[in-house]
Figure (cartoon, one colour):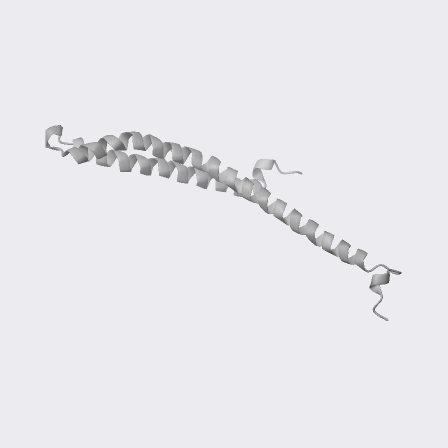
Length: 125
């Protein structure tokens, strides 16, 4: 009996990896929210904005759009990581192919340089 694809060892390890990635992404969203909202809420907690210094008010107002920027970084990070991982694999594959091609050319050229009956292959004399 063939086991369903979902229950194979490789797919289980892939599921665990995916679960871990989703967990870290969720924690990152929570972390971004906490950074931005704790500072923002602490600035305006009293309800009296007149007591807040201008630089602190500017920081609080900067953090709300900054949370959206952090969220976009968190959202696109897995896609960017996948792109760079695939690009690195492709470049390594091309490099190995070039090295293999260069090595086979060297072997072929050295084999061609020593042909029987070649006048250059015979030493002086």
